[in-house]
Image (cartoon, rainbow, N blue to C red; front, side, top):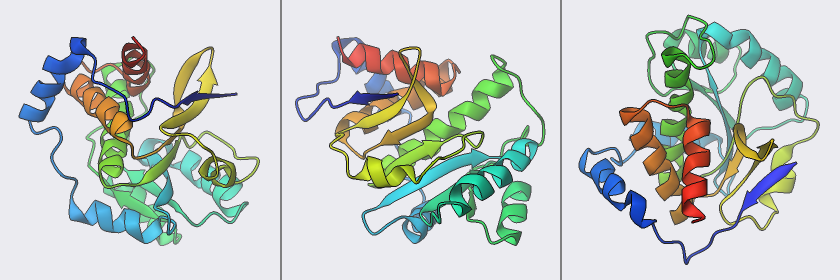
Length: 219
């Protein structure tokens, strides 16, 4: 099932993280996203600025192709963009006329990584960076892992929902960052700014950081 967070305009940054939030701003972690990324998002998003984003690299490109065929093509989804962390992955996708944008380059993009390793955590935190940039630019995002299979077009139900901030796949009571629908609200931008700070300073994976911040925000 889904977990929903509808914290609204009365959201206040918890006292515990005010200093950390200020430090994040001071280190330029909230710098404006680049114009090229904005152009790519605008090109492929719906007229309402809604888009599906999925991370890929050369080490799991086969899963990206499989996700494209079983979910994107099957349901004729046009508003999607693969986010590549190496040029080779996007070149191969683009050669098949599949939307892909090289957001950054990761030195381990062609190597498999294992759960709870530094390399794995770093790959997972790329998601934090490109999601935050898209939220700042005003896009509503469905972020999905490429090992997911859609049974219908999820945007049809999610876009018509009343969620103010997010809806995510519930994983034993925790928000699964591998399938999460995010609106460009002040609340979610604040959450992802702090997640980016955590990624850069501590390096825990984005899912742990997300759930920590949601729990803290509820205090």
